[in-house]
Structures are given as structure tokens and as C-alpha cells.
Picture (cartoon, rainbow, N blue to C red):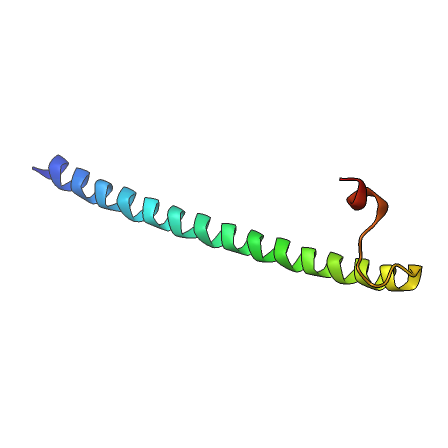
Length: 68
């Protein structure tokens, strides 16, 4: 009987830990996505500033992007 009670406790702990892992993974994924979005926005702003200085009309398109 004691072994059964201990097993029930352990199964419950495992379930709680799995839930926590899922939540943390989701949070990490969201954080990485937000960081990538911010980096992309920053890069786009820098490119548009550079394009304006280069006389490209502020479109931020470089030669590599035009070739693609």
C-alpha cells in the first residue's frame, strides 16, 4: 500500500514537471520570437537609414536583395 501511495505521488510530480516544461518551452519560444522581431525591425531601420544616405530613395534594398 505504501509503494502504491508513493507511486501516485511520483506520477503526480512527473505530470506537474511535464506541464512546467511545456510552459517554459512556450515562454522561451515566444521570447526568442520577440527578440528576432526586434532584431529584424532594428536591421530594417538601419538599412533604410543607410539607403537614404546612399541615395537609394530610402527603400533599404541592397544589390544582393535586388539580385534575389
